[in-house]
Image (cartoon, rainbow, N blue to C red; front, side, top):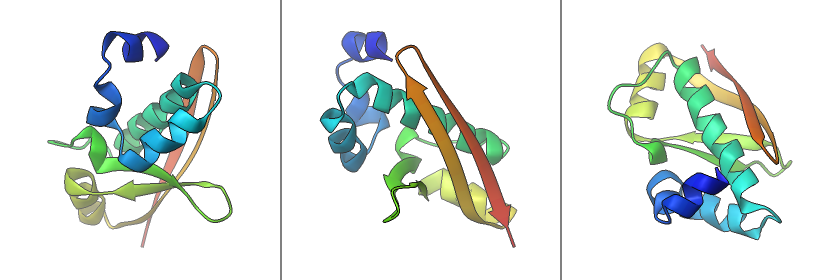
Length: 109
């Protein structure tokens, strides 16, 4: 992620929401925080069985009052979740220097 950010300085604005950018930039190693959120997006798309026509910013990660990650859906990602009857999307992710991993569960009615 650090290399991608260095090569493409506009990447954060294209992929992440303003809230995510502010959060990541406050972290000791912003690239690690961005990588975790990027992995979370990929996990959500897979949990929804793929999303046609989605944009990176259709899926974002915020924080619940408890500090747990919370997924927010918009656009094509929300339409896909609604079509599947998904009411909640839960995600867990971790990141460190050279890797990020995410796991997502889409819960229906």
